[in-house]
Image (tube, rainbow, N blue to C red):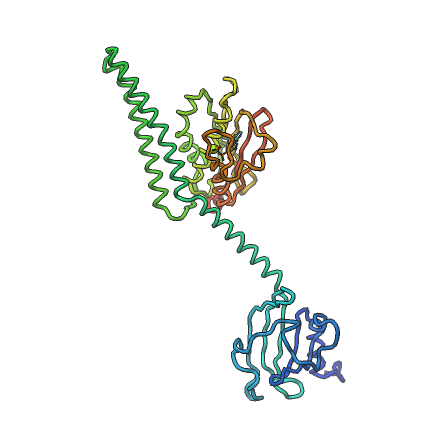
Length: 372
Ligand SMILES: Nc1ncnc2c1ncn2[C@@H]1O[C@H](COP(=O)(O)OP(=O)(O)O)[C@@H](O)[C@H]1O
Ligand SMILES: [Mg+2]
């Protein structure tokens, strides 16, 4: 190759190595004397030319003796090339991480050398670390949704049908004493029976929840979630004189969700809305549950009340566990809601309702396979 005249193979090799972003070094396999350091290595080294010095893990980290596949010190010319090390190492002085690969090769002067190439992988490491932390946060949040918390909330719900049953039964007793006929008592008894069934369903849900060790996310219709959840509160709404409006956009895609968990979120938000309207005038006692698409990949469920709204200074604390402004509140509702929604890769937000009151809204991801 005439064009390369006067420019031999080893010089070409050095030129190529000099052009690399990774730090490259060649060190005598026996004594560790640096025979070559490319531009990137020298740049890391800083002050003076490292060639001639003994390679130590000061500039880029080096494997420990025991980490080598074969001891480079004992290698003969006939043994090379061979791989010595390939792995990621931290550089304690700088806190950076390097991917280091060392091979034993015959150097241009015939000696056996450790030819190393060290690539800075700190950024990738950090990204992986952030992802790991995120993962941990999610599993921590998922742990917050413990069986106990969910079960205690569901147990709380049993009180409602039980109280209703007691009411209906007492009502019957009063009517019987007044000489009511069986036909007059029958509808009341039917209502009591329906409430008993409702209590049974709640217990069934607790069983389901306890049985399941892991939340299970499957494709589910938002309307079905809302139907189920609101069945638990319509009686309560009636009693409180609240009109429940359900507004579900047609043709919503299915969402990927653990149905019981999301029902729990809806229930919590609806109950909070009810509580907030405790002192509202009769024709403002309206609670709207609205579901609509949020972009292509998510559905937003909003619970809209016309209650007393939220004080500016409370806004940041609402989601903290045990924050409550109610005399009998637990303050766990919103904390659990947020955990559940984040577990579902969604977001739970709160804003003031322009008509007065508050809007809590959360998103759920659309079930991908259903969209195809
Ligand atoms: N829809 C709402 N309107 C006004 N304030 C609300 C609403 N939802 C929640 N809050 C406020 O957030 C607090 C925390 O709610 P939550 O975590 O559900 O606990 P709890 O309902 O037991 O108080 C409530 O005590 C209340 O002050
Ligand atoms: Mg609550």
